[in-house]
Length: 238
Ligand code: BV8
Image (cartoon, rainbow, N blue to C red; front, side, top):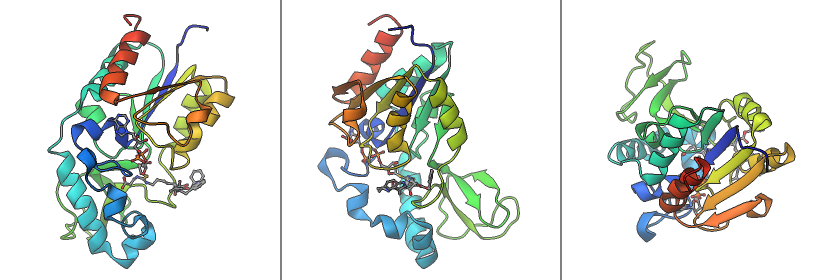
């Protein structure tokens, strides 16, 4: 196998589960999952926001407040270590809207589904760093209008920076998927794109995902165990 140079890493809710953040399909420590507590149509679509903005703001205000109490885990730390020392191309494409990759020290991170800690003004289109609630319709820091929404990609909306993601997949020698069920597109299609472009493909997940058959190799277990071991291996220590 020729030397691995360019790496694309896709992460999902499973990489933040050990930090105590609910995943979408299974709550932390057996509690109800996000999608069991709320209907996608109501809280994660532009139509739902028009229908009941209060419900949507409460949903994201709750999650925005929750992630600020959580800490990065061993998987986030290991990926930040790899990012710091890997001299060739590396891109962490995350579906997660939390900031735990960055708080662990990772820099080459792309949030394809947006970020909790940003607000998007639908009047002046500006984006602002945001830690507080939006329920009270606070004014936009740029245009003062009261039309801020969570800066997340809802179902039916185009994910962010798709061209940058495709450019990275084009160059990738290795595509690694961590903690994702492979249920949501276009993210769930990246393994096929990477494989068709000749990359090695590796999955690190608690259970087989919907796309497991597409991967050259699947390792089952907790990200907090699998990711540090894989990083040690790729840095030649393993
Ligand atoms: C779009 C932000 C047009 C908001 C999110 C093709 C076929 C079918 C449907 C579609 C299709 N193309 C488009 C669609 C429609 C739709 C879609 O995919 N629907 C699904 C439900 C069928 N997609 C869209 O609408 C997308 N937009 O398509 O625009 C377009 C067209 C062409 C090209 C481009 C675009 C937009 C989708 C984005 C929606 N926003 N999030 C918010 O967070 O509230 S999606 C959200 O749900 C997450 O970001 C993530 O993407 C997804 C949840 O998935 P996971 O992260 O994988 O989490 P999950 O709980 O499912 O799984 C966790 C996994 O971790 C499990 O496997 C578990 O075993 C594992 N795990 C758990 N603990 C651990 C662990 N692993 C390791 N260690 C542990 N400790």
